[in-house]
Image (cartoon, rainbow, N blue to C red):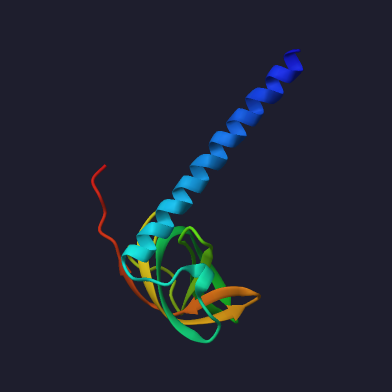
Length: 127
């Protein structure tokens, strides 16, 4: 019986976590649409797009001996890889920050990617 209680508790926790993730994704989708952006799920290869979301990760990578700052922008429908070639750091580009990106989308390694996009950072909120 103790095993079944533990399984039920795990299932409740898993469901709560999934529900929270779904809620957050839904919120991101609404915010992106509200500011007039295309969702990541709807971007097309070799087309310009404006997308908005939250930066989930920011990493410094080297591409052919050139520094590149790479970020993942999540909008609730999917993730867009954003790469600034020749950059090691950009003030304000950090995980958790909301941003709007505009540029040419291309598929790179099967993932939607923007190189050197124009960007706008959302102001920080006191919390």
